[in-house]
Length: 298
Length: 286
Image 1: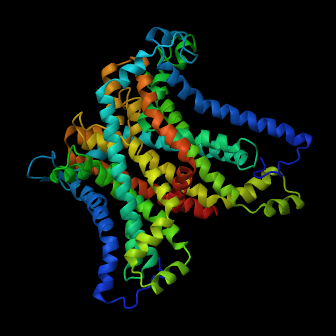
Image 2 (image 1 turned 45 degrees about the vertical axis):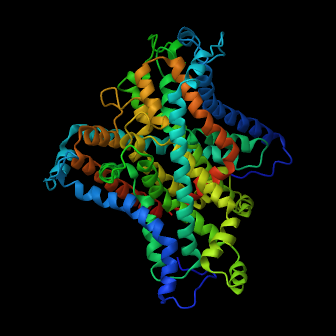
Image 3 (image 1 turned 60 degrees about the horizontal axis):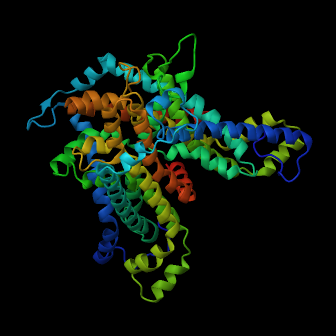
């Protein structure tokens, strides 16, 4: 980021101008370094120790925490659930948001109202979302209380080990599709219309136009949206915690709920930090992979 | 499926069917979004007995006690105050620090400018939840546990990355003549920042403020880890505790959810333009 702006001070090496730059930057650098970068570095170093968070001495464990994490079936369950959520988000959010974006990119009456409505769940608090759906899916009171399914009178979706994870994933889609929709609309509206006209002259149908013009041109946006889906699924916690508390018996646990319960909640700080490092590493790997995939496709 | 259709001025027959289909799809999705929210708001007016048999419809008997009980309890107002103070402090500090740093990046040429702005981008990549343990230890060692600052400082640090990107993009688009004129008048950088740049930065200040406010207002994980006493609690944590205590007293919980949802919805409706542009710009830049 070279400063092409107008404010080039005469002599950059003078201590006065250095002081000037510092006066603008020091507060931000300070807070950011202490409360963002330092914990980040600490989470790496802490992950090699056994520590309850209080004792003055930390016990060196080397890679012991990681070894324990990787052989803990509870971790693998949480990881499996997390990756299920990620796949589910990909397969639902992207097509739903893209389909709706195609409809909403047109200048039709009431389009802004729909856009706003669809975005609304995204600004609701995660906890609010979780509780709304905990109520709606409650077998005694919610939407399903009067529904008879397969001869069962009251369906307790969130208490069902098979259904709960699907329910959680659906709620997360409900919450986030509007956000990706807005991203896609912005990308669609930047496409030059003459491309479509040219394609029509060449006899291209709607399907061809979509796959040969629309998709390649919004690929950068799709990859941003994909990356955000990865990050938000890997960090999924609030919605799930308020919806199911990770239950029934771990059926909807995620990596962060595992970090919280088995790490901080059990005063195993080194262990929790190790889980955090694993989540971070996974974020990097999946982000790199998704970048590679979209890069090759392009 | 054509992404951008012909202008909607004239509708030939075929596209009239498409139009009907379009609105049908939009209406269905709109219901999927709205019905749950309305059901919960109405649920707050129902007794438990009615909730069992009438989950979605209008209440047969409007029960106001759920809402009035909550509104008259001091702990409700206290937690709203806590959330409000924390969010307001975070927004003010974020806007101030981010705009200052972004001003330096956009308007002053200095050694290491590139490196430093790259350093600020690291935060976008790093998920806060993974640093929860060291953050807890840090805040505790600073003696800040269970205080407003315990939330404000990490929240500001976490929000700076995106805010700086948004501010510097905006500042770079300002016409250079502004500064030339100011320099002729012997105006230094600080005065330029205070009296010329910031007064013109209204829209981006609004965007950054609102986006950070909503994020702060909604957050659950940080207060859950870093606050402990009921006196300090923010509403999302308190709401969860409350549902834990009240089990399945859904009428009350619905009322509680509605009352805490209301400020978010109102702010969103008033400021949706800023929220949409801010959130999507922040995302695209990452």
